[in-house]
Each structure stands twice: as C-alpha cells, then as structure tokens.
Amino acid sequence: MLALSLYQLGCIDESLALYRTLLEKFESPPDAVWCNLGLMLATAAFEADDASLLMQVRYAAWQSALGLLPVDEPATIAIVIPSYNHARYVERAIRSVLEQSLAPDEIIVIDDGSSDDSVQRIRRALDGVRIAHQFIARENRGAAVTLNEAIERASSQWIAPLNSDDFFSPDRLRSLRHSCARDGIDWGFGNVAVVDEGDRPFARNSGYRSDALYSVHDSIHMSQSLGLSFLRCNPAISTGNLFFRKSLWRRLGGFAPLRYNHDWRFCLEATLVAEPVFVRDATYHYRWHNSNTISDDPLKPREEASAMMRDAFANAIKSVQPQGAGNPFAPTPIVWGHGFWSMVAASGNISAVSRSELLALLGAIIAPAPKLQPGAAQN
Image (tube, rainbow, N blue to C red; front, top):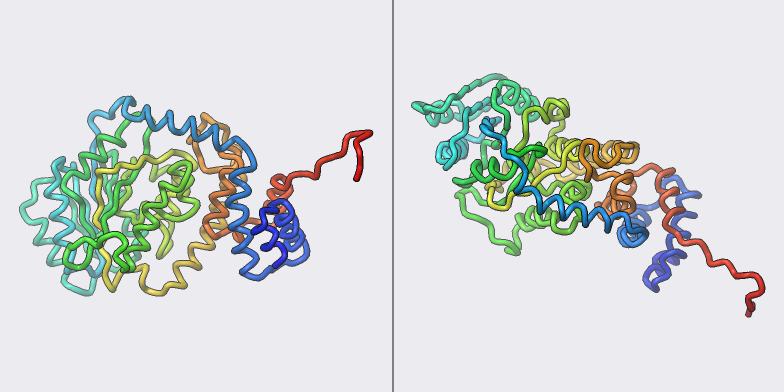
C-alpha cells in the first residue's frame, strides 16, 4: 500500500524502489503487486529515456516512404481456407473470395473433419469455379495443422488465410496487394468489422462483447509502432486477417500447434524479422457467434497466452539484432529501449518477465539520489 500511495503522490522513484524490494524478498508476490507494478512501469519506463522518441521519428519516416517502395510484379496470391463445422457460413466465405475485385490465383480449402454438412456445401460453392482450386476433406487434426497443410499446398507467393465462418470485403485482396506486395514488406493486415450470424455489423460502443474485439483492434493506435502493439495484444484479431509471403511462413516454421493463439504467436515471431503494414481499406469481417473458439472457456486462452508471452518476452530480450538487420523496428529492448518495457508493462503480463530482468530494469529506471557538491550547505 505504501508503494502505491507513493506512486499516487508522484514519488515514482521511491515507489519503484519499494517494489524492487518486494521482488527481492518474495518469490511470488500477490497479483495486486504485479498489477500495480505494471501500471507504474508502463509510465515510468516510457519516460525514462529518449531512445523510443528517436525510433518514433524513424518509424514515421519509414511509414511515409512505404508507398514509394517498388511493387512486386506480378504478385500471386493464394486463398487458404481451413474449414471446421461452419456449414452455415462457409459458402458465404467462399463467395466473398469469388467476388473479389482482384481475383486470387488459387484457392485451397481443407475441411478438418467436420461433422455437419460443410463438405457438401464447400463442393457446391466450388462447383464450376474457374480459378485454380483444391479441396481436401479428411479427419480432424486441428486448426494450426490444417492451416499449415493448406499453405504448404499453395504455389503462390502471397498467402491470404480466411476462416470458414468469416468473409472478405470485395476490394480486400486488391488493397492488400497494392500496399503489401512491395520490396521489403513481408506481411500485413487490415481493418476488422465484427458481424453477427446474419452478416450484420456490430456498432462500436454497442455494449456487446464485440466491443472488446474492437478495443483490441484499435490498440494499434496506442503503440509507438505496429510491431510493438503485438506485445500488448493481437490487434490483427484473427489468422484470417493476415496477409504474408509464403517465404516468411517458411522462415518462421509455420503456425505453432496452439489451440487459441497460433495467430498471435505467428505475429509475435514475425515482428522480430519483418515490420508489418496496416492496410485500412482491407476489411476483414470477423463473425461473432456462440461457437467461436475463443468462447470455449475464458481461462484456457489466457493460460495459453501467458505461457506464449513468457517465451515471446524471453526471445525479444535476448535478441541482439542491431538496427538495419532483419526488422529495424523489431519490438525488442535493443531497438526501442525503455519503450519496449513500457509496452510489456501495459500488456498486463509483467509477471511473465524473469525476476533478474525486472530487477535490472528497475535499477536502470530509478534515478539515483542527487549528490551534494563539496562545500554545499547542508540543512
């Protein structure tokens, strides 16, 4: 309580010093300690040095120059659709692909052992389609495995996943290719619109659970860079909202076999090697319904995410990649200085950082007491 009171009084260094003492004495501080420490570090770390301010200037210049980068010609695109028990929605998903103003070069659909009539509906939706396509129906192996299998089958340079219960806006592929298929860009994602079971959009601030998704998506505007925003949450929302080079997917070893967060983990790993691009006009319609995977059990996704973030923070902290190699804006301490720690603290996952790293951070942030000059008056 004393540490919190000192923080509220504006005595930041004194407050953090008390928290450092708590971490030194107790191996498992109460949850309230982690929560309050995270809030304090989010502010204190951001104000502790000028490295993040310099990076913001460089990042803004890079974003301004994106439109001047050479365009990949031609950039081929594969749509990959992992399908599972979405008979009610899968035809709408496929139709949104066929209605694109820029047609994809190929479509690959794999049904992952659906128990409804998804297979029949997919065959009906693909019947007579002139775009090169593949359809595989097999036993259940899980979303990440199915996604990787579909991508492996693709021969195109760029991959655009689509969840079988969601759908694209008509100009999505055109916008994505125009913005992302450029020299030096390996991945990106677009805007998200949350819709209900009847394709009706949920309004923002409507009081529904969709507000939480919009809040996560909008969090990109609260970060110093797009890559840094993934330390806090997954602003892309869904695998289906991603657009990436197949070469990047290979470099990262594909999607990890996680049930709830394979998309977020992919993005975290991708940010270390390539800075993403946000394409405002490339809308992805994310469907909210009672059988969404994330609604299975609210605790399980959080437990999986906590373990994932511990690995992500460890990888970022040990990264010694200098600017100019890989992603010059990689969300790591060596690139963003204390701006990295501010975002980690704001994520609510500060307890996932090792004790030694936290103690070192607190020692670097807490300002040393001023020294009296020889001969100075002492009262």
